[in-house]
Image (cartoon, rainbow, N blue to C red; front, side, top):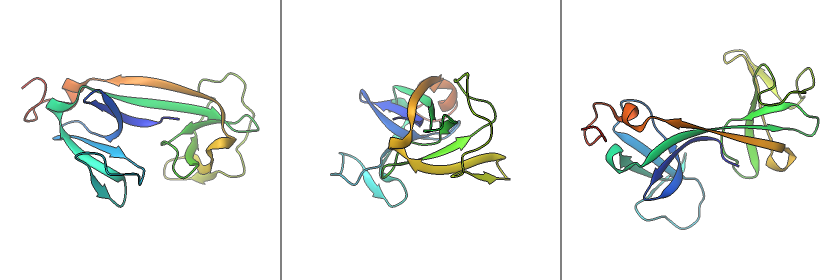
Length: 150
């Protein structure tokens, strides 16, 4: 299951962190498996590698929705870690037509974000739907050294 930001470098897709006007992309390989070439260990993210915009082929975000056993529509916040996923329950039913009213007991209301949030085992999710949103690589790299437009 994918969720969040991704970048393609050297023909391979990686979890990624990127923002407009930054110097490039941070690629992430979250496992503790053998070190991928060119990556360094980071306690927070796992294996990471900074890449200049000129070396990035594509950036995109994956919006992932799934249902729990009762049928609540949940947005998966990030890819599974240790068999669990972080989820939020935004208003509405996402891509699903029929969702129950209320909120699952395992979610807690975050007053700052105004969302119901929590974690649950990934194997308790069903009917997952991934929606890819292409991002404009040139717009993110605009004005940065080694950008695709420079």
